[in-house]
Image (cartoon, rainbow, N blue to C red; front, side, top):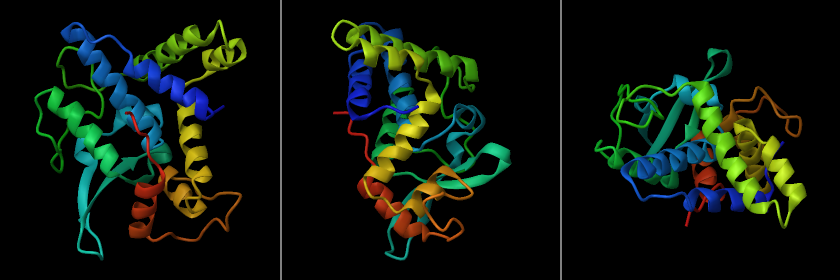
Length: 218
């Protein structure tokens, strides 16, 4: 239920190869790219994308006197968690916002949805709409791989948005990010591979997530 390195690379290739000939094509490309960025860099669930807004991004000064961006998510069971908003994530957020003629950075309390429909309506996408977008990208990738890698193509046909959450967690763990930080980034009550209830230092968690968990579109 996760994508290995090669399948994730092929999925990114599909997204970067989406047509951008018409304004609608361009809007679709920017939306897909931002959606997969959120799913991978933040490990968000579809419901969390639908139910949270860009006003949930905020800055906080760390002990190093630097401003760090965070994303406060109200997740499963109405539990809040803080997700490190890395510089790569903020760059992609700015790209998506500026394409829609919004200021590059969000302001506190802004009710702009994290993801919205094509056509300029600033309203949240439904869960089913996001599910369809993700499945379509996986299907396109599977079609490309079918002739040379049929087993991998079949795996991608089964994949869903939640697979990207597992993929993100696997990549964080593979990068040797402290398991406590992975737990806190994903809002888990505990991890079977850790002592479970230890509290990570937020500033260290932000720095280590920034350093070790990257997407690298290009």
